[in-house]
Length: 256
Image (cartoon, rainbow, N blue to C red; front, side):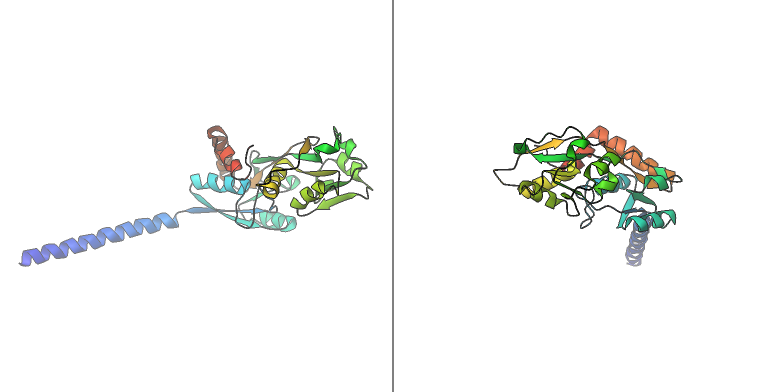
């Protein structure tokens, strides 16, 4: 009887030891997870959607780092605060960081490319082959477009009383379709994203003509640590090769 009792006692103690070892290993694994803090000044769908930390850029960065064993803490700030926090080493990296201030930082390969375009109602038969063709037109552009786009664009819209810059870009589509303006200027993917939202399920969708008159702009992330930059670059290369980049993009922009 004593032998049975001793066996049960030893078995129980062995169970406790195994359980504690497993718990310790799990706890060590959880605590060993690495995190990377990234700040951005832009929250523009479909690239970055602040309300749920989603979007093409957010998903790409988060999933690339997840593969390497990191969690991403994404924060938002004004351009001025973004620069300060990055240069003070308060964060590990930044997206949409001013190029001129990135001299001592490690820049990634392009994460996405912004392609701004001019858009008109097809039935208006407006010809726009170059930036100069915008001169004198009723235009609704995105906020700060005259500072962001080529100097030639700023010159073309200068002193134009019928030129507007809009913060909420979805309203640009409304203005175009109500014929309050002749032309809207915005990024192509932003246009595609909002066109889907505005006209989803509608039979008679407006027909627009897209005029590709602006140079593309490559958007990168910057990091203090070269290793973090390399993780993004390797992940981008892999995602482009295996098609996952296109899968992420398709979450927000549906191909016709």
